[in-house]
Length: 166
Image 1 (cartoon, rainbow, N blue to C red):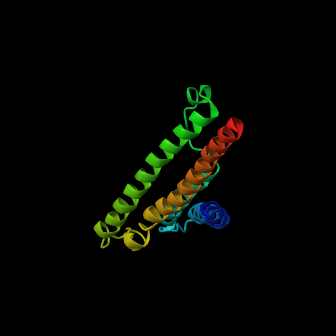
Image 2 (cartoon, rainbow, N blue to C red):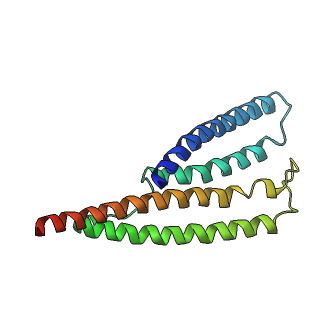
């Protein structure tokens, strides 16, 4: 179930990330051109930073979906496949706990910074800060989908063992 939800979210995240990255490139290029012509766009750097923050938080989930986060697998690869899955499930549980913690702290940040504004644009932080708990929520869905896969694999080992004993 969570694997289907995660795949649906993936397509949306990819499209949104591509659009935001394109906007960043256009914004920075137009700011550089206008600055060289003597008409700087004062707010361009700030908007680019905001968009970059958004795309970074979105892409954290994309890399998690593709299993491209940094990891140290030297010792884990020496274990048998069932033990690897148990270890991966344990790590996923820790990651889920971290994302839940980050969601709560992200919501607190929204309340802490609700009156603070970006200098050049006057955009309130409260409109940008929800990207933190949102990205952590999306990561939670991905982690639960990975946990679902691990549990299915572990169930497969149990089924294989029962089949051999018969």
